[in-house]
Image (cartoon, rainbow, N blue to C red; front, side, top):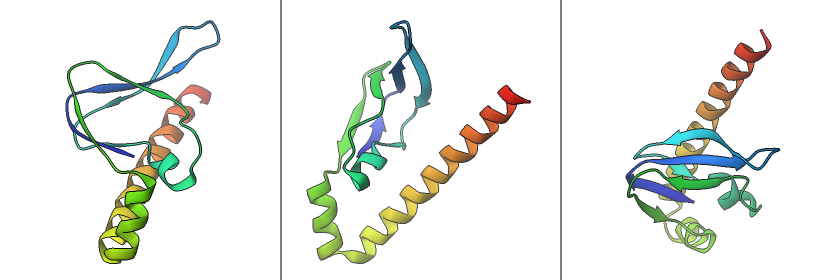
Length: 101
């Protein structure tokens, strides 16, 4: 998982005809790759920096060590990740509703 300390990025995915589809803009303070951190699944999209960026990485091993050594901190991280995923789902549902309705 990555924490965006500075810079701007885009989340892109290859479209049917090879052109990249922009799924989201990513700003400082964002978390990226959280699903892969918890599930171990490969990434589902690609990050592209639109300006110089600094990202901080948290590996699965470091997350496990945090859980063992500082469980309260790990719980706070989990809580923030859940809130972020919920916000993403709310935005996706709203966008889908606009396209269908």
